[in-house]
Each structure stands twice: as structure tokens, then as C-alpha cells.
Length: 407
Image (tube, rainbow, N blue to C red):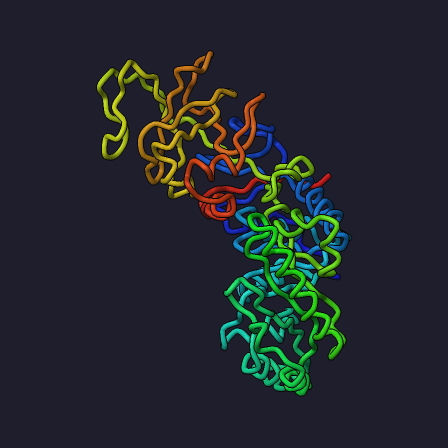
């Protein structure tokens, strides 16, 4: 196993910095890049803790899903923290480009490409030794040809569509004859069989039926070939199915829960928050009654209002749909209501309830805790009319990532 690089790298953010030194505005005394108006702080120790919780709940090591820049946390840094962790069997990515980024960073653990490869990506995936998904014989034959041309074998996982409708062979199309044709492709190693749960956190009856159907079909696949890995459960499946997970698979894909957000709330207490999101006050003003705030004048003050402008906006990934929907930020540990529409680079909040002076340069918490108050991704998602996955992955690349080391 290769040792991953340990020097600071760019993980898709404007700047990535090591912990230490301290800087005004950092809630935990971490180094924040000079002139950064907003940044996220990422606790790598919490990340490793959550991976162990996922493996404990599943009853087996998990695939750490690091697609979409590690759910906004920085894929390379996440992989670096989890490389060699016994609870982690490898890394899941959406496409070949994400896998290549991990390899360039020194990742030696198995990489699983969870989306269908484009035709031009297949030879690269085979050459890199990535585990790839196949949904039909045409795809499988293309990987076989790519492996033959390179004098190697391609590690493929047969995806079976048991209800997601996104990729995979339809259950009705599988047969022993179909399987025999797949196994005729001698440059393939059938390394796994997989499916995906679309409703594990919403529809228990459908999920259990789906899992039973997958187990029966996976058993038929394994009777025909020496398939090592069977994977079905995502974070919601791991949490919802509990002790039954190991009945259906021997590998699970931990995504959202890895980052400290529980799609099944009853397990939330076992996870540790990984990411907090911060910005700074840029200006504080007293606005008179009858004064509009932000575009469209959707909010007009009805009293003298102390307004702080913050250096964050939808250009940083702070959702515009939070506008007018009851969102707050924390300033000196006090919830301060968002005023008017979120703009590209700035938002305004009412700091009248803060019992101390609010000054330019003061920190504000968008996601995370300060004192007794806390804003989590689920709360932010509710106000924005979306899901926690979108909140985290939407944090833009101009937001600096600041890492706290594991341990």
C-alpha cells in the first residue's frame, strides 16, 4: 500500500492549509488563509471515528465514498486520513477523473468507480486497476477488449438494478445463460456484484423486499463465479437495516454518515460532526425603519435594525434558497436571522440580539456550533428546501478547507 502524500495540497478549494499557528476568526485557533472571507474546518479525527462506526454497524469494512470532492470536504485529504484505516476497504468515486486524482495524491487502496464509464475512459480505468461497474454485455466486452490490449485483467462489478433505475442489469434480464456469456470474457475478473437502495431511509417494506431479491440473485451469481464482494447498502441502508446488513452484503458504501450526518436520525448520536463552515463580518450598520435589504427589496425594515454584512454568498455555495425561509447564522454564539436575499458574495443578518459589540472581522458560523448553539446540515437543508448531501457538496471551490489532524 502506498503512503499518501502528507504535504498540504490543493483539494479543490482556493487554498488548503495545515493546522497550526492560529488566526483571527478561526473558531478553534486553526490557521486560516490570509484574506479568507469564508472557510470550512474539517475534523479528520471525527472522520475516522465515523468510518469505524459505519463498519461497526455494517459488520464489515466499508467503502469510503469520496465522490464530489469528498462531499465537499476535499477528496484527497479525506483519502489521506482514511488510507490504511482497518474499517475502510477502499474509496468510491463517481468517475475516472476522481479516481485519477486519488492516485496522483498517492492513494494505494482500491478505487471503485461507481458510475458507468464513458467509452474513452475504459482503457484508463483498466490501466489504473480501478474496480468498475458493468450493466450489460456490451460494456463488459469493451472492458474485456481494453484489458486484452493492455495484457491485463479488468476488475468488474456486475450492477443489478433492483429498483433504483439508474444503472445495472434489470433483474428480469439475468439468467444462467446471460451469466455464461459474461464469464466467456476471459480478460475480466468478476470481482463483485452490486445494487443500490433508493429508499432505505423512507420505505422500510420496499427496502427489505429489495434486499431479499438482491440476496437471491447475488447468490445465483456467486454460484456461477468466484465473486468476492457483494455490496448493496449506502449510509441509509447501513443505519436502517442494522444487524441485518451482513445478511445481504459483505461490503457497504458509507457516504453521508462518514461526514457526520445521519440519514436515519436514531443513529445520529454515534456520529461526530466533521465539517463546520465559517465566515467573517465585513461591515456593521444601523438601518432605519422602511429601508430595503438586498435585491428585490423582499425585506423592508419595520424598526431600527443593526445589520451585519457577511462575506459569504451563493458563489461560495451558501444556498440562495435560504432567502426568506427562516435561516440563521451564529454570531458570538447567538442566532442571527438572515435578512433578504442571499447574493453572490454577501449576505446580511440582524445582529440586534447579540449582547456585545459586533465588529468587522468577527467570525460567524454558518454550519457548526458555537457555545450552546448549533446549526447542522439537516437544519440548513430544511430551510433551503433541499437535502444535506446538496448542502455539503455545494460548498464551492473558492472556500478554503482547513484541516484538523486525526488524533
